[in-house]
Amino acid sequence: MLILEDIRKTFAGPRGPVPAVDGCSLAVKAGEFVAVRGPSGCGKTTLLLAAGALQRPDSGRVTVDGQDPYALAPDARARFRATRIGFVFQQFHLVPYLSVLENVLTPALAVARPNARDHAQKLLENFGLAGRFDHVPAALSTGEKQRAALARALLNAPKVLLADEPTGNLDEENGRKVLSLLADFATGGGAVLLVTHDPKSAAYAHRSLQMKDGRLV
Image (cartoon, rainbow, N blue to C red; front, side, top):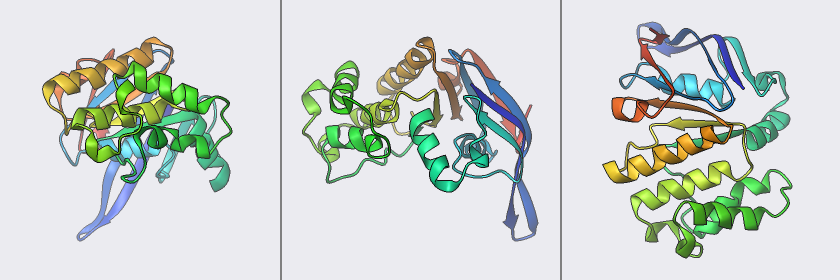
């Protein structure tokens, strides 16, 4: 479902090139939840962005659902992301002037999805937000915001879900809820790649890999 082959990404530093990701390879199958754990600055977010077709690697190959997204033209790549990949970040990126339901529906702007509104409402109900459809994000608790962001990520029924420190701003109880929802997505046949510094979060995964200095060790 998600295959990363010898991914490399280097950034310019004050003393020369800095390898953020240095030859990383991994595969996440349908129905599998994989965690990449490591400290801040180890390269795990850069690896996730490459996996999500958001940041082209210098070399290596990314395959999502049998397709190399970087082989597509930019517009086609954006549509591919919208239909195949869901993203959950530490920051929720909810539009402050839209209601919760409208926020969850924003991915439907990129593709014509039948019954998008009904699906969005069902996701919110499943995530314990049935009474929050018309609220703006400022009216939500931190945990509710992250669950709304996760509902948005799942609106277009992606094949792959990428999560970057999704519990970083949450208390322990809300963190458990979000991680359980990620696990449920994998149980339903999706592929989940989580990057985190937290061993408790990584413990929810079927497999946990360690990243250090840009390499999986």
